[in-house]
Image 1 (cartoon, one colour):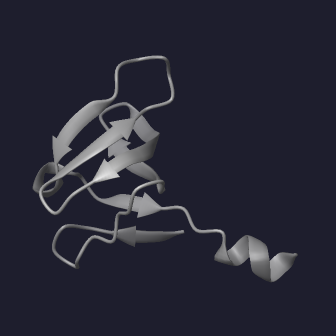
Image 2: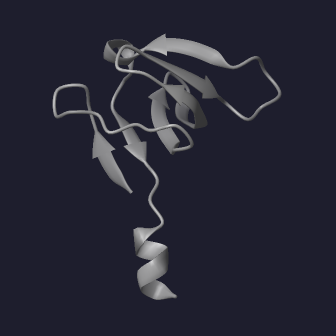
Length: 72
């Protein structure tokens, strides 16, 4: 898992699982669609997916299977 912010060049892609720092703690979301300006996130909590502008994303972490592949 690596942390990204808008400043250091976010690398969010369709299908990524990210973790965002929310007001009540960490929030995990599935990236349904990512464009250069907007991201559609499914919070996987039976709520409606949300659309957010990339520059409004708080620092986030993108989950990667690279560490898991190294263990396997």
